[in-house]
Length: 258
Image (cartoon, rainbow, N blue to C red; front, side, top):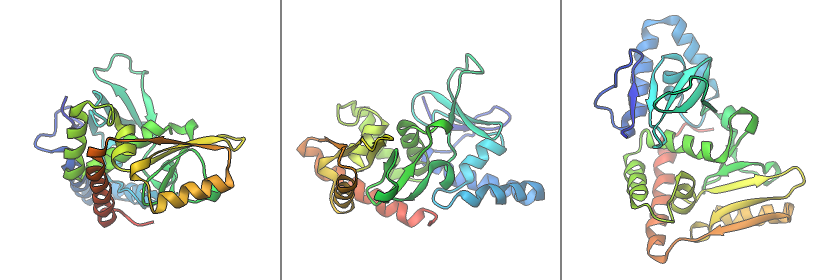
């Protein structure tokens, strides 16, 4: 199934590739708020917490009535209702059968630089961006990985092409979105319980630099946290390292700073 935007009138927005969606959302939002001062004020308030990801796609869905078909490549639909991002499989069988996803603002995704002192349930990028989430507000590792993928892929053709290629190979290395982030882009998945036990999943071939320091710091402060290594075949290591570095460089140039 293709991935595309659906307009409020129910028609598909034609001619927009996945990696053009962010620029398209920005264009539509900026056009709409020029025409409506009340909408402009709403957007200005809405965007205040978006200091890492950009606010346009969330605003387009939550406040302008657009829907995103198949954003996570599992034949679902992302839409806005009651100020929330909701997701359900398509076709829509039960209107109440949906999952609430967190918005991609700093507060909802707990976006900050990683600190051992505030180690918690999180997804951590190889350059130290930490996404700490609240399970009571729709935050789970898998959902956070999907939102990171959606936000980055909505402007990056390089990421889109690489992800699609890896998924089409149907290998036991990149078998889902979580595995792609860990084994291709060098992300870490962290779990911490109230008794200071937990685990960190990371790829051994892609660690180094920041990740080495992170693992050392967590081990010293939380010795009961278990480290779980994943591995990739030797023939994939160099291209995975290149992709990891490429995405850090590309996103550093695009993202809104803390």
